[in-house]
Amino acid sequence: MANPHLTIDPAAFDPEGIDPELARLNQTIIAGHKVRPDPWSMPIAEVRRSRKEGRGTFPAAPKDRAAETITHYGPAGRSIPIRVLRPSNGDTRGTFLHIHGGGWVWGGAEEGDPRLRRLADNTGLTVASVEYRLAPEHPFPAAPDDCVAVALALANGNLSLPRGVLAIGGESAGAHLSVLTLIRLRDDYRLTPFRAANLVAGCYDLSLTPSVRAFGKDRLVLNTDDVKEFVLRFVPDRYSLKDPAVSPLYADLKGLPPALFSCGTADLLVDDTLFMAARWASAGNAAELSLTNGGAHVFQSFPSAAGRKTLDEQEAFLRTRLGLE
Image 1 (cartoon, rainbow, N blue to C red):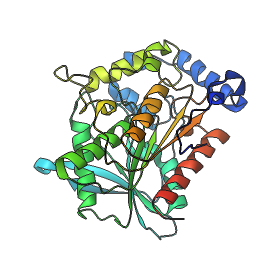
Image 2 (image 1 turned 90 degrees about the horizontal axis):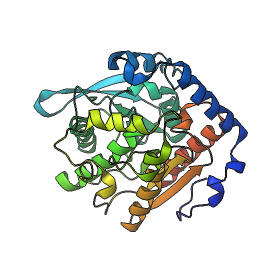
Image 3 (image 1 turned 135 degrees about the horizontal axis):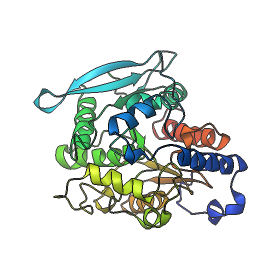
């Protein structure tokens, strides 16, 4: 359950209190990884294709029949596709800018269709998911550049999307890119157009927090080596991994919108969420924290009662913070 006071309930870390459904799910995920090829032994294009076809870690995500694609032409005329899901009833009051996960290397906007469809219908927000450039073909800062370009166009009314109220968010690498986008809009353009941020299982310190370093070899969606491999492909050597432009945990966070930080306690990135939520609040921003005992990395992508509950929390947070109740 989301906690607006950032109190950390020790019960969230009690192994005796893990939901049996999540415990079984975690065992299934680990077992599945053991019979599949190591993704780093495969061509990146093949891993990306497997994810889209539901042959990777996450279950297949049926494509939304009502989804549409619009294109924003960013700096130098570069085209950036944006996948758009509008509320089914046709009544929309604003836009949720979504940034997908995948370690900056894999993933695509359409992989989140089922969760984004329910978010659109349960909040009344049009969802716009950025198809940003991926590493290693396009290393940092290509991905944040694309996200900032789309966010700026949205804020300035240069996209065919509603602007009544605006929110931003994503999961994993998408949560990281969401925070970088908020910071760059504030610093480079003196803009703070988003009224809420929904940040799920983000990686905010690319030099690796203690929970990532200590996680080890078992691949519960991700393991320690996976995060290292992602960062190696995403960040060129000339950047320090503690540079605030790369790792927003070290950035000035003042003047950012209310945020909900959600994470499972079996996620190797749990320290990233705990540390960033604390820094968000200490910078004077409203911060809420939702920890799910035994939840794996982005466990909301798998069918479970706990996953549905956290999606309910995220949608309620957006409705409340955006005045959509």
